[in-house]
Length: 80
Image 1 (tube, rainbow, N blue to C red):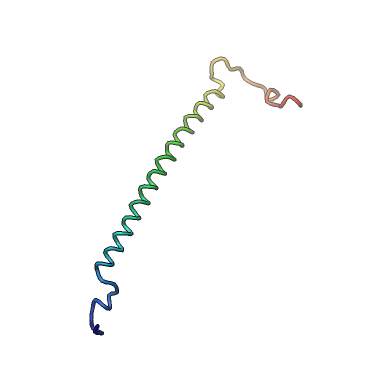
Image 2: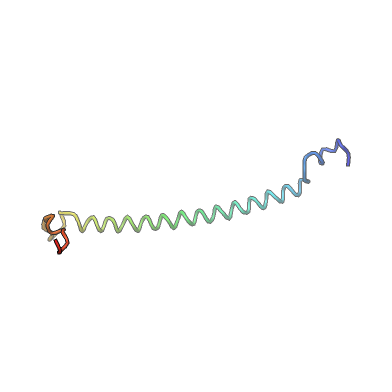
């Protein structure tokens, strides 16, 4: 090995560096797939929760058919 050898000064051989980069890229691709799946599932949950919230809001709206305005006394627990 010579002191002026450019390959020795650059560190590991190019093939080892390429292998390391390919491994890192593979891990990054796997992580990206996992994150995409997580985001997809969370969006499904958000959509379901928004549907439930709309249903609850429709039940509580005073414009609903058959619902009369309620007094705050009706909201108190029976032991009061």
